[in-house]
Length: 464
Image 1 (cartoon, rainbow, N blue to C red):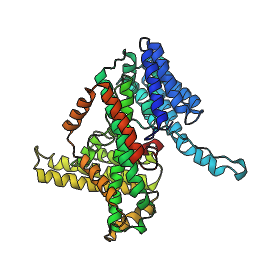
Image 2 (image 1 turned 30 degrees about the vertical axis):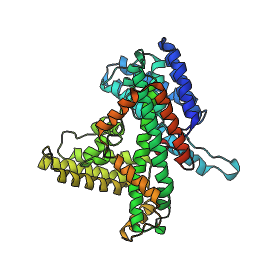
Image 3 (image 1 turned 60 degrees about the vertical axis):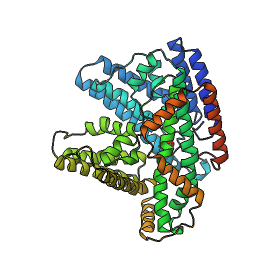
Image 4 (image 1 turned 180 degrees about the horizontal axis):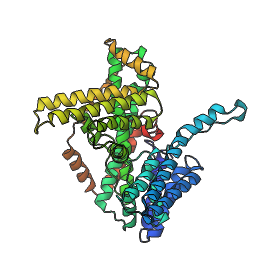
């Protein structure tokens, strides 16, 4: 039941959960049971062992949470939160590397081929927010195992976020849910937009240009290789923001509000602003639970070093490879440099001149695209080959058909749509009658089938 563009199974699943959930809305126990069953059914489609693994790990964290709520002795609290961190990091390492290790040491005769088809990173991030918040006394825990299990494995977020504090989800699950017709319209708007972003932009760019050029850069001109890098920046944005839209819309249909994850990041004027706009819940998690936990916060030098450490670890979370380490290192150094520049010269006075702002946005975007080369490449050698091809400065656009050029231009232009226009479009759609919502979603489904290419592909961040 992977969330794929054009996948009817997932949306049939959402519809079933929706009707059963609201039929049980009068009873807190019943509606939580419906959510928990939906969570584990969603994970079971990737592997039945998740139905045993996730409840076991979640229950341990729940018990640790009870201990943190009960005990006030500092050494005991440190021991409890340390055990939770160790448990979740061990689960992260196992989900990423145990299958590879077992496959490497298996004999050909054994036929062993073990993988974790559902990445557990986002579950682990959410799980750690709970125990660390309780340790820091930044949130209220729960004595209800059902509430905790329903929140920590909430199915719209477990695959690829947005990362949500479990204490906040528990609060929402505790309140009696409500869904107005307008909220339902907003949810359908988000789901429809997410599908269009994924199927008509992200998947098309990946299949028509990005994958081909990154796989065999020497077959393309330097100009085409550079265009593929820009195309990948758009693919990644529309893929991941599309997933977030679908997740937020799904949760909204159940009366749950999830945080936004993207805020026009490619219009950022510096790297600090970029990370306030890109994958917002992940950057907030790195800041709140990693950066602030590192020593030396009051020194003059350590915060800059800690920024680099934080971003390198954030890069390695995507995969233990030189490419991800370099991606994190480049961003960490740029963030540290930006912070040092602001400390020396002060932040730019507002309002900044339009020309100066445009230059800053252009330069920031070029740097981000440079780092995306390492993020996307399969190896360091592949990344260097891609950069070498761009540096060849050869010109040629024989492999860029007119339709691809149009999609690229439209995708780039959509980045400049004002937030007020987007909000107005959502509210106008939400206020329409239900038959307009249904007709629009049907038109989206037809458009995806006719124009979406050879079928949906998994969301990029589902593998993390």
